[in-house]
Length: 441
Image (cartoon, rainbow, N blue to C red):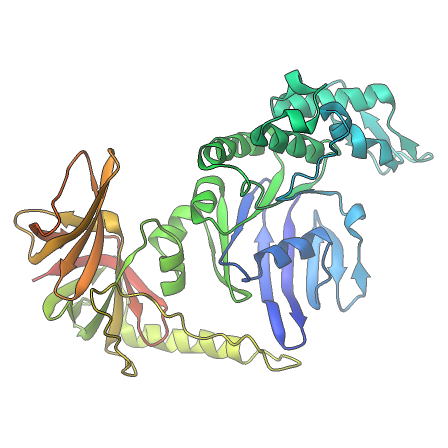
């Protein structure tokens, strides 16, 4: 079992909080991606779990063993946590063969109760007793043969790193990390040095590797496509604060706030400012896009007054946390983008009748009987689909039209918002109110 638990983990330098009171549980055999923009705290979080960075406060356990506890004074060093680390830089020895690179760290292992089975897997029995022993040459060979087969680099064992492609070097680095039998495998943007085609291939390999090893993977990336395609759960961080921790499709379809909705998805979500109120039947009557009347029907029952009361409690609880110094990197509301032809920002202070409507591009449907009239602002066909930007008054909406359809710039079109995947956020605090169906009257 390789369950990881973080409880109230904080890392700060003076008044700058790189990670702010993080609670996180990574289940055994999970593939979790730590996602967010540069400087959000994802790599710092990874390094704290691995033991390469010391938290300011909090508690971390791996496989039921406390590896850090600020109150108890526990801080197990990285080399005692039995974790593997795969860096952005492959860090292969250029003067060693592939076999020697993979085997290099194995010769330094010295433990009591250590053995290797016929499959080349390291067996550790801490209750076996006896003196610590090192692995024999035959045992090391078995281990190297096993991990090289997992990543499919057996034909290259006698080659040097300089004779391999970028993808092959990455496989060697993965094999070297797997060889000592780590409880958890940490990866810090390991595919960023590869070209687009090779990155796609390696994503598939990492997914297969996760299943074949049965290990717990923790993966840092700023690429939301990598996070969506690889992870069993996404941990999205901004300014050191956890924004959402859910399965990829939940993060995409039901984002906690406007930041999450904007960060995940390519092309990005369409945001529209709206004003209106909730009706007796639970729907919201809104005005948006320069005067269009719309009705938003939530998929689940929600009462605006009750929702705001709960949101206020949660916000107050976060803001009331005791910090030894004022947080220099203050948590400011996310400035969500509203695409316009001519930028005319609305700087009015929002109240509880101000909302933000989010529509994913795949729910923007061009049809002859659509109630919204617009014109094609740009069209980018890729063969399988066409990404269009549609001008509606001063606003721009992005749509993805599947199939080999072409549009002319300036062409008049009509559109509607299909499906029940529209999201409604409070403009006052940026939080998700509900998902639902948006109809233009």
